[in-house]
Image (cartoon, rainbow, N blue to C red; front, side, top):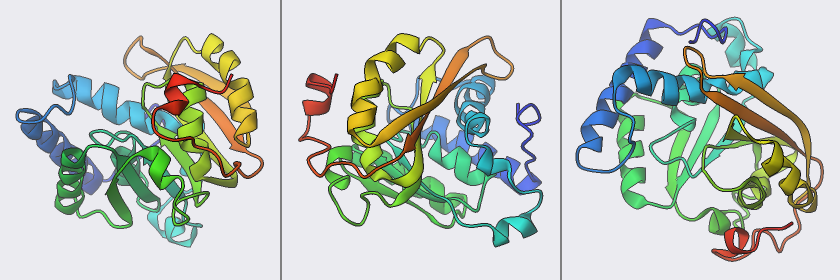
Length: 242
């Protein structure tokens, strides 16, 4: 899968992925982290799926060696509703120069993520516990990120309200979506525009080694998000901007 994506992983990175897999399935016995536990399925549907971001965010591959990575501008990424750490942790393992924030509303998942971060000896990554709409109002996080990603299942109009406030002007919000996305994209255009974004492209592909259709929606942040967004808890999903 990584070969198909033009990603080269070192032996250390492969070991980090394997340790992550072991922790995931072990912790999953006592905490509901994922319904997918078979090694091949985790590799394809979690790890590889997370790394497919390179299809929509080419900046990740703009380096040929670790040496060049040190000279690159650090890209700040927030993963909203990260759950068991997808896509944030696989992206951090594969692209160590990323500065990653993992956000989730369930504290026991954050504890698991911190254990993963410690075991894999990852730098420049933190896991924070809280709701997306609360941290998006915090000046330390609002409009501070080059890139926001999310594999959360919310409708795109709702998800945009949670995520676009984190993105700097000229940054990107790229949600991970299923293959059938056209109607959802069409229904989200007003919300994206109101929140300061502009839909640039929809990248459709099949997950490497499977026949599963996936999509990335590339949303460019073109102006600041109005201070009233995101609205209070529950509002973006109950009454999405349409």
